[in-house]
Length: 169
Image 1 (cartoon, helix red, strand yellow):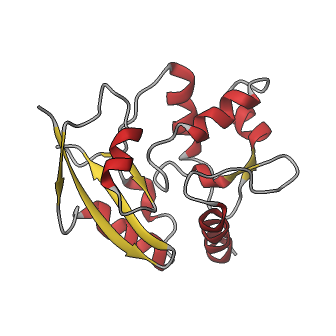
Image 2 (image 1 turned 180 degrees about the vertical axis):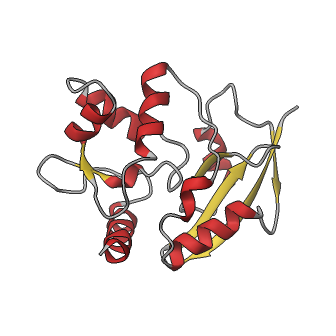
């Protein structure tokens, strides 16, 4: 039986919960207080059978607090564990390299991922990302500059983009 630890961290935009495996790698994260909802986002090969609530996840909890307090690069060193096919796995790695304060379009994201014609696949990588914040899919916009979608709501996405833009300048 596999298990994962989780903790909820209060943030200016609502509760943020992260699930980590036995090595401390983030399996799923988002602006919710429902760890069960996050568990369902984890790929079946990695999905834990049991969730254990913790007061803190150590470095992961501290980084979430630092990010929301303005240290937008703090998330970069946190290990994330997600699995899928080669394109999605690569696309998630590419997302982690998009600079805070400089969002890209889905078209540019597809190009950065090495498949410029695969705009829908790039959008799918964002939609299937279980580790929000640590794999910053919020940094991808529609071609016309509008927000597009975000699992945790467009108000959260707007706050994150504004927060990062304010720190980038």
